[in-house]
Amino acid sequence: MELQKSTLEPEQKLSAPQKKFQKLCQKIEQEQLRLNEWQTAQADIQARASREILPTYAQLREVIFQQIQQLLQQKQQKVTAAQQTKLDQKIEQLSLQLLDSQQMSTEQVQFLTELLNSYGHHIELLDTDDVDLRSEAKTATESEDENVEQCEQNSFEHDESEQERLAQLKLESLKHFLCEEYDLDLDFFDFQHDPLDLDDFIKKFEQKMQEQEELDFLSQLSSAQKAFAEQQIAREKAKAAKKQQQREEAKKLANQSIKAIYLKITAWIHPDREQDEQKKQEKTVLMQQANQAYEANDLLTLLNLQIQLGQQHNLSFANQQLKAYNLLLEEQLETLQMQVDDIIYSFNWSQFLYSNRKIKVQDLYRKYEQDYRHVQQKLARAQEILEKYQDLKQLKQLMRSQYVWEMHAVMM
Image (cartoon, rainbow, N blue to C red; front, side, top):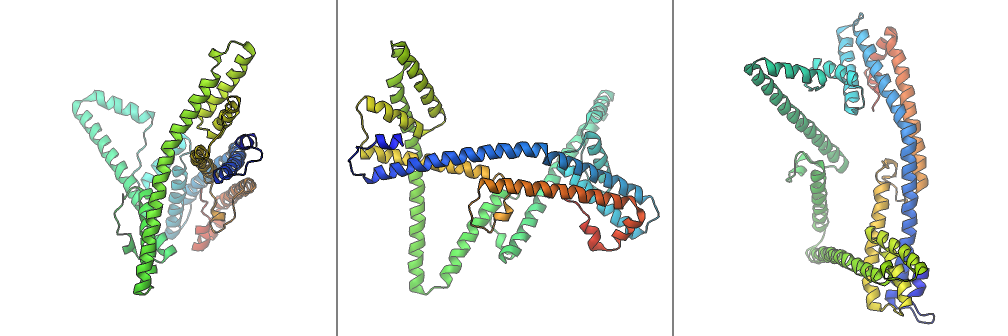
């Protein structure tokens, strides 16, 4: 690389900072290529999903809506009380799925809301007709105004309580899952946390699990071993705290050094100070590169420019200067890696949960094909179920087995 070569004398033995500088430059270039590859793949997959998966899901929702309508019609036929109950449960289940998708038309949302409210739910629906009715009510009498305001307040309070109830249900479900997964008792979750914030709960849970693992480990040791292990744990925690402090200092240093490099470059190449027209154009191009690199916090590009221009001014890098730059390059490398990880884990990789293999771009395309086939299978299955629901004899046959009946739910 030009940058690496320019920092070293041809016959000079590489110092430790110089070796590290070279290695970091190579890693950053590789990570930039990797980031570009993932960004391209992400845009491609999103475009394909818009053309293929999203329309298929729209068809799936429409078929499920038709299932609900068909089941409502079949309720009017000659069915037993037990069958009526099963039909009601299925209708309610499918309606909740559709309403939760938030992708239905206004008319469908109104239909589903009224249907669910008839099953005992309390879902508020605000549409243009409601607004018009409330406007008319406000112009009627002062007492009617108070009634409307009171209804709105009660509705708002109910919506809030409904959201809190759903959040609490999710939290309880998560607790039971964690109990099964890690063989825990419900008493384990006695730590303080925000009851409506799952992220806060998970963070506190992970902290307690780590503490519990340390206690379990120490409990298996003898007194002498326990004392030694406690010292090691304390040393590791102190090392982690020191590393965090160094990272914070490096971040401050990065902001200061990048700005200093940028200002030095602009002082050398400012086009307004150049009389020669050709050189002025060359410096204008360099200035644009410097501005873009500074705005993007791109240290490597700025270093390239500084070294290139520094050679013209007979300047070279000292080891102490390289040490400072290495800190900044480490931070830039970490930022690039985090950007790649953000793209990777914006997708669901459940099949990789128990694999240590590094996820590649090819895996994303394979995953997309699997997801697309899966939603196509869901649609085909939903259409098959709709046909069975249209035949009362087949519908009753399905309801005879509770297992088969429950398996006929299509999850969105």
